[in-house]
Length: 405
Ligand code: UDP
Image 1 (cartoon, rainbow, N blue to C red):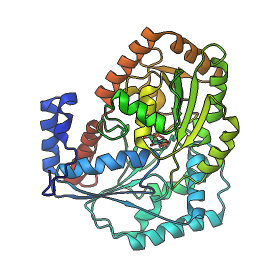
Image 2: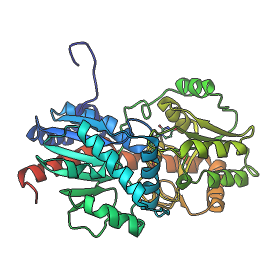
Image 3: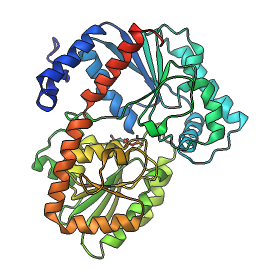
């Protein structure tokens, strides 16, 4: 609690989930790094998984006495148009990598380097947007590039262009070993995690849930199926609607597609508008930034879909599993690292398969309960923010002590 009565989360809040011994171990690791100055750099404060992670992680690091900041880079729409194309091409899409695109990308990052004075002990750069920043500073300590994208099949031309920037870093962090690249620098594998106390994940009461859904005009008279995602083709929203259309012939239900605009994702609005044509009384498409609505919708849903075709990790899967809701996920990227098919959720590779699982789950309450319980437990054991915090602390201390292995 500070002198004005504000209180943010600390590591102690996690005691019920990880036990006192683990809390003390992590606190001691934080103590060893006390007063280090750390900065994270990303390209948006809200919308999408990176912003979600950093808002909790930076507060937790500070609560341990590690002075941790968060900067964002900004640029004109052109810049974010180009970086979104890069994002897509790193996930296997196409890009026409013209000289003009490279010039705009590098120029805008250079301008950001002038505005941001980074003389921190440890610097963590998130995703491709700010990647070239490293070329514009005198490094004082280790710099890490943390890439959250599904890198299983990056476009080779783009990767060849980006690799010289990547290799200036002391190390790279990706979400899974499947994303490792042929690089001359060490690579570490950190899966993302959730903050169970955030507005998005705290234990809402049933009346709070109903009130929030009502406020957004979401009917609760029939079972709800939902997908919560940025409006992005990799999340396969049309495939979700197709699965729903098949399932609704057997079980009456409501589909909600909820997305929020991310400032670094210029394609979202267009995709959202293209989906509006599918709306009917039982297919609702909503574009709203409201974490409590995400929480309420995930809790109220009988089944959550995350039918991604590519997915760096898929925090929305973790969030729904934490709430004990069965998730049907696309068998892509980080989703199979979270869902064990048939044990704590289901993995699917087509709309037809998704529809089949939907029907089974909607008809079988005990199955939903069993899967939901297993889902919650697996998040508690593997995907809470403290696990990720400890990985960062271990990484920092290994690079600070051994200095540039
Ligand atoms: N999200 C949100 N509101 C929405 C849609 C998504 O707050 O309407 C959040 C979602 O809860 C999750 C994050 O954005 O925390 C998405 O992360 P994920 O890893 O699933 O996908 P990304 O957007 O990073 O590709």
